[in-house]
Length: 505
Ligand SMILES: Nc1ncnc2c1ncn2[C@@H]1O[C@H](COP(=O)(O)OP(=O)(O)OP(=O)(O)O)[C@@H](O)[C@H]1O
Ligand SMILES: Cc1ncc(COP(=O)(O)O)c(N)n1
Image: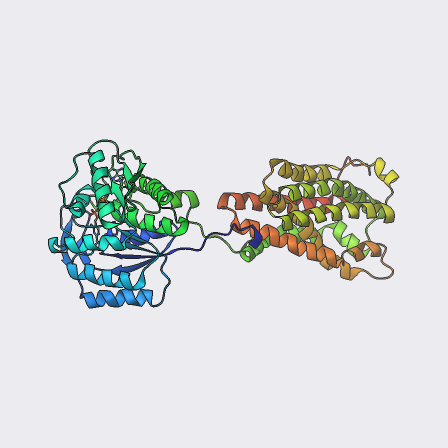
């Protein structure tokens, strides 16, 4: 709602994934890009190896020349400021060395290393001869995210038998290589899948555990890739490893849960990286304020045209309107303005910014000032004492007061808008009809008020900005409230020559 209403989001972190490919999109660089985007980052990708694989396993691996890998890396870092790097499959010793050289030269602010060695299908993704080179790379990373078998290889030990042995092994790796270890429990038997950040880089061991319940699903292909990319992205935003792990794990659990329905492949399927976002945000694009304005104006075209056709409006314009009807209209208008002003004050109370609060408060004052002016120029307070609100006046005010009582600011200001917009619109056609001998000249002249034109424009802007930012359901409620008020504006102009049971009778 208005630029001043948008909560300033932190800048989008630029996150580079250096990894192998998975043409089915569940693991490797394809999964990384989705995870980075799903966790609020701008994803970039440098490919280390092309892998012919699917949800059943790896068929073959093609590693392009290391010189070409170096060219890709330089192309990115020569141009883009990188906020975090996630490293996945490296494949060969030469690739590890090339990445190592680039890391030493560029020294990115955050590096998460997922030490991909063997796919869950059992296929090797790192040459055995590259294992020592990978260990040597650990000191250039901030966090390493091994699963249990990978942790054992990094430690140069056997596979840990239980979770406490995993934590002890992680502490040894952390201390030896000066890297925080995110030990992952996905490969444990049982219903718990804990992860733990183990930091022994300063000598003392600190362990933060992140418990998790196993989701009984077969779509866990690429969970390691996805978690490490999410972690790099969220850390780049928050600079807090603990918070980034907790949030990444929550996001991953949601994405595993929702991934079962994706229907990708007949083996171990992927997670659904955007499922949570889709469920919460939908797929609708947001209309621009100008688009909403054009749509709403068109939506009430029929109402606008029939206002111009009304005998009251025509008679007011050409001066043939009977004085009794005109005075009755003014009396109803005076009654209307009293409560309309109160509803504008509610909008001021609900306004999310001080600028908007001030605008609606000023409009509330303007409405009641206009009412007082009516007494001075047209009808006395005494005249009004005997006037009862007509059915339309009552219904219109009830509609506005109810919108105020419901307390939804966006819907309320949409309901308030036609009184500005249509009144001003009718005025642009009535005012030019004024002339010296016109019986309603001084009334028609009020339509030329420049201040009212300015506040109408501002009201339109505020409502359209709010509608543009609203979710589809609320935007639709706003449009309905707007249309209803526009219909009441029509009824209000129609009432003086039509309404029965009013004090005129
Ligand atoms: N069935 C599951 N239910 C809930 N969380 C899971 C499940 N499987 C894995 N995870 C979570 O996914 C992340 C990756 O865990 P895992 O130990 O399987 O790593 P990995 O073997 O490297 O992953 P990958 O399957 O990509 O090779 C961890 O946060 C783990 O807790
Ligand atoms: C390119 C690439 N990187 C990583 C993995 C590991 O993922 P998973 O163990 O789930 O198969 C993979 N299969 N392919």
